[in-house]
Amino acid sequence: MFLMMVIAAVAATHNQGERRMTSIDMVNDFFTCRQDTDLALITFLKDARKIATTVDAKEALLMVFKTLKDSPDINGVALIYSDEYSGSTEYRQFLLKILEEKQYHDGRSAAAPYKSAAMQVLETIRTYPKPIVGGMAGDIAPDSLGMNLALDLRIACEGTTYFLPNLQLGLPPSGLLSFYLVRSLGSHRATELMLTKQKFSAQEALDLGLITQIVSLEDLENTCLDKLRQLSTIPDSTLVESRRLLQPDLDEVNDYINAGFNGSLWCVNRLRT
Figure 1 (cartoon, rainbow, N blue to C red):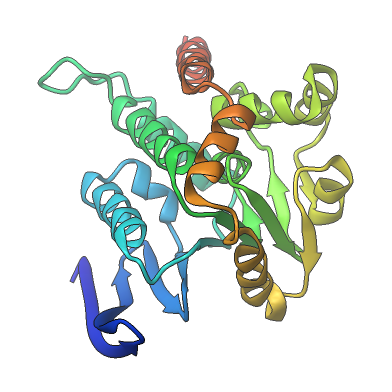
Figure 2: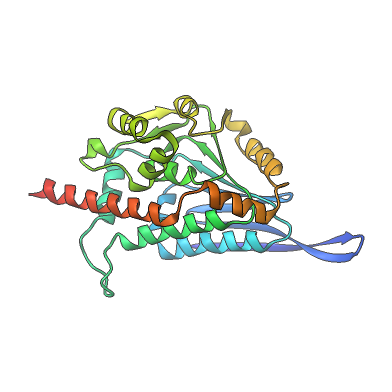
């Protein structure tokens, strides 16, 4: 089954009466979501990058975000990424599939669903009234790192590796990652990283200020939850307005993503001739 969600109602007594609390437990082909006391953990599974090209999966993820947003029992969300990058060959095939020049019946390019999904998730993060912390383990592909850089805090476990394979594949860097790297590091350091590194370690990411902390794999989830509890004391409206001031205008991000896809398509066509 593609999607299965179980929401169990549990009676809870309060001084001013009784209300029903919900326990959230969800599993689908690309991610899971479970509740830990007053916090939620969304864990992305193998092939989670296909969320951006599978409409049902994207809608399921956005539905979970909305469910957590509307729940008075959830005060923060941790996003756990693990073992996503599986090699340059498969990653290139994934990119080429997105870059196919075919048009949908409504005139959109094949890349349109991917770009739309990225922008919808970024918009959700930007306006979310609860803290969102990213936890990373294993091998992380470019767009996943780019998406993590939009979160409030980022925790990586020991041994986490970040991959930048695009140049070796004959393609320009990911537009999403390029935007956040330039914003985080400045154009000179971002350019140096993109042009000279095919991969870099969690320690290098920490030294660059791209992540907040390195912990053991066993401590990753608990550390994310601890950080969420610290941030959950910030009032909802204050958190949203702080993101509005600290996060970039989404039109700028969209321009980078479009430029990345257009540049990649141009390079692919050049390689074919």
